[in-house]
Amino acid sequence: MSKILQIVREIAEPVCERHGCELWDAEYVKEAGVWHLRIFIDRPDGVSIEHCESVSRELDPMLDAYEQLIPGSYIFEVSSAGAERPLRRPQDFERFMGSLVEVRLYKALAGKKEFIGHLRGYSGGDIEIGVEGEALRFEKDGIANVRLRIG
Image (cartoon, rainbow, N blue to C red; front, side, top):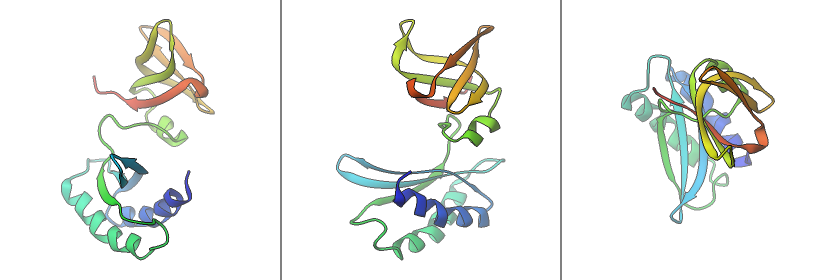
């Protein structure tokens, strides 16, 4: 994790908690020549626009106070983690064990780069999913991303 994201997470986590939310993820990416700092939040009963606004209102001036943290300008966004959110951390996989997921691979396996099945196992970045009664195991180095899948 980059130094910027590490500090952003440390600042954002307690803010999210004060608003009854969980910090799901953060990203700092350049798109079309513009930097974006995105905070993704979650709540057991769902995230509303009001939750995003309240976290954003409190967090934005706190991040501005760290002028040296992010050089130059950027667009700041707070949004829901979404129903088909990416799973990245071990606790994400533990929390959604048994859920339907989509696994995308860097290289095709049996002519496919995308597999959909129920998450059955996670160990050190390797994952196992169940597809039509069969267990498929994917090694960490071959996985491009894993995200929840709705029906």
